Image (cartoon, rainbow, N blue to C red; front, side, top):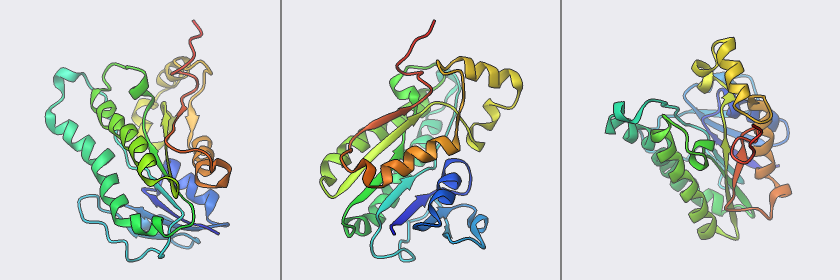
Length: 230
């Protein structure tokens, strides 16, 4: 039984993953909505990315760390203020760095730990109106490879780069049949990914099935970044 920490897990990918893991592992969730897990086997605590992270409530060793908070600010570059880039960077990168540093001794105490980050298909595939999110998610990819080298062989570090998913974060982009159909048609597989689907990829990265994998950016994008069908 492993100790797994999810940062941001009360909806979407994090919630699906927590439910997949709770019966077989010790799951700890830092989230803005800890009440979501009342009555479950999951231990949860309020998360505030603006505060220093207190890891005292966690076990002495952690076997898995997943950072889920993210942003999707899709606007023309000319209308973006520098503060938008800063806000995205604070959530996507600095929040991750701050918490990971706080729990690193617990990961180092594990015999074999796994760290999972989230990037975006827009980092590899240039897409209009994605400059802010791509800048911060590109930093996630650099961080993934750097930490994979620094932490090897004891801690593995990988990232998943999804396209749009049917999650609460993407709701405003999928709030009509026309938007849903357009989103499907942009992908070679003509489908939108789900939180349940990507939770399976995260689960794979956490455990021994992926013990020979580190420093990888894994596309989860319906073929968008690598396949052209028309």
